[in-house]
Length: 280
Image 1 (tube, one colour):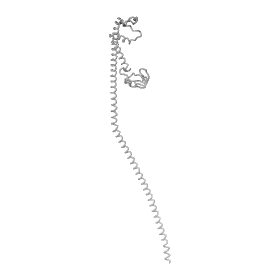
Image 2 (tube, one colour):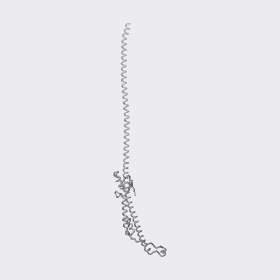
Image 3 (tube, one colour):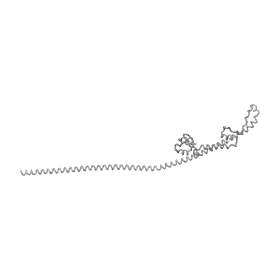
Image 4 (cartoon, one colour):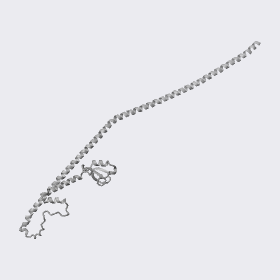
């Protein structure tokens, strides 16, 4: 019995000792597990952060790639458009320059041809007027000669008198007016322009005066058709609103280049608002 109780009392510390060892083992395992859990959570959080960083870097890389592709495509498109514009604008510009040069040459040539046409027309008109006046003078001289010969032939017939069969029933003739000189002096009211015409009707020796007057009239007519500034070209520009035809095109262009306060008509000094080309 004593031995059994001794064994029992010896077994109790052993039991407490085993319980202490078990409790310490449980604590160590719990501590180890807790430490492992913390380490695993930290590693898991680190892995999550690394994954987020990698995903963000991938997104940034994709966005950068897309932006670079768009920029490069836009640059290439602009380069292609610029090259096409240069390829098209070069020939078009040359064609426009050639067209403008051709138009300027044609305008200058047409202006020269127009001046020649006006000059030929003016000369032809002067020749026709001279021919018409010469024919009129010739007809007038012939009419004057015929009238003088008729008067000379009618004088002896009136002196002889009519036949007796016709003279009987007629009343006595009225008294004749006093004779007048052949070349009476012109009255004071007559002008100097009518004198050459009256002298021309008196005989054939006075034909020089009407021709001289005709030439002077033609010269005066030609002078009136010339520009009032250069006195060389024909008047072809009508000034508005005063309606004076007094300038040629070259003088008008030079005149309109002056300041605006000098754009006045040379004849009436009115302001020139507009010009019009007139072809007579």
